[in-house]
Amino acid sequence: MSDTRALLILHGKQALNDEVREAVRQQREYGWDLAVRVTWEPGDAQRLVMEALDAGYPTLIAGGGDGTLREVAEAMLASKAQASLALMPLGSANDFAKAAGIPLEPFDALALLDEPAQLIDIGEMNGEPFVNMATGGFGSKVTASTSEDLKRMLGGGAYLLTGLTRFAEVHSARGRFRGPGFEWEGEFLALGIGNGRQAGGGQLLCPQAMINDGMLDLCIVPAPADAVGTLGTLLSGGLLGVDAVSVSARMPWLEVEAPTAINVNLDGEPFTGAHLRFEVRAGALRMHLPAATPLLG
Image: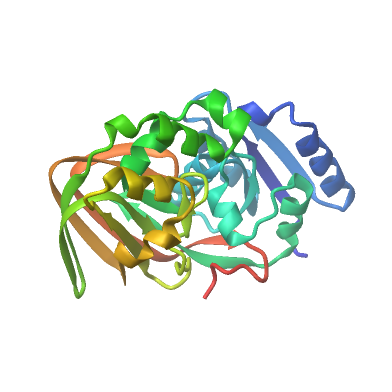
């Protein structure tokens, strides 16, 4: 091992997590020079990434959920860093980690530092990066409106409960989708544009997505007559049952035009827009993943 230095950028809510502290202690005993910095307010993750890179750390670890992973990755991309990235999944849903097979226990997650870093793709929407997935429609509204307290209590199940309590707000969006060899226009309940496979606390929107194939996977759930019933199946984790009526494709870029702004969620970060362009940056980042991860083609 040429360089066993790494810096863990830890979400502030996990500062008193005893499992994290013990995992860091053990990793240090195994010979790693592992430093820890804790975020306090918006912008801290980006600042800490810059400080770590300036200090010459060859590996950074995002300690948090999908949003923390996105923040750290975004700062690394902006700096054109050659450093590698690892993830200690500490969020409520941990959708990327679960799809990638990254252990949820802090010590086991840190063990991936000994795995060679792999080149992975990064998705972008109007220049905004995402590591895992962009979701749109009612599902993204549920994700954005789920309270932090509920997520702490129920984990990924909090998204299901929030969705069940907001059925009165169910309505479709309209969009025109265009990509290489693909066009679709109509009303839809939800959409997923996946670099990874799942979002919203376990909704398997793009079950065949790979993060090193230079492509984004698209899943559109059209709006049927029974919108509430279809969305109930979706939110309860049964998207495979809706697979017969969903529209799917795989492409390096996608443009979406809508008459009104669509709610879009990028790895936990809410955005809105009526004109959206999605692209993939192939091999843009190096990441430590399990050797048998299903996300690598």
